[in-house]
Amino acid sequence: MLFAKRVSGQRDLFNQEDEVMLKQYVAIQVFLATRKKSKGQSLAEYGLVLALIAVVCITALTTLGSNINQMLTGLASKISGASSTAGLGS
Image (cartoon, rainbow, N blue to C red; front, top):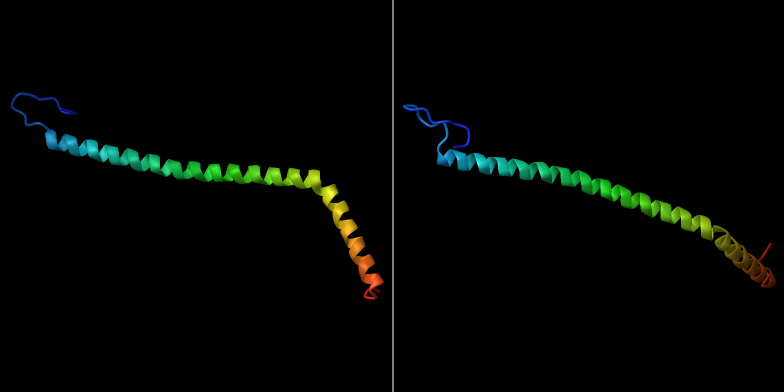
């Protein structure tokens, strides 16, 4: 028996079916409790991944920012030079 001691002349508090049902109830409660925790963990993991992506993007833009700026400045000067030779500039 799970909880009850058999005393002479006293009926058992829990029989075999009650014990099985109690074990099933506890198993379901444990399953539901761990299921709730995994949702919180996955949310935390998504947050960590998002933070890591943000750090990588900021690092890449900081590192490559000057090169991209020079490339766009050169492209803008070529476009403005081409438009002035075609008579479209101001």
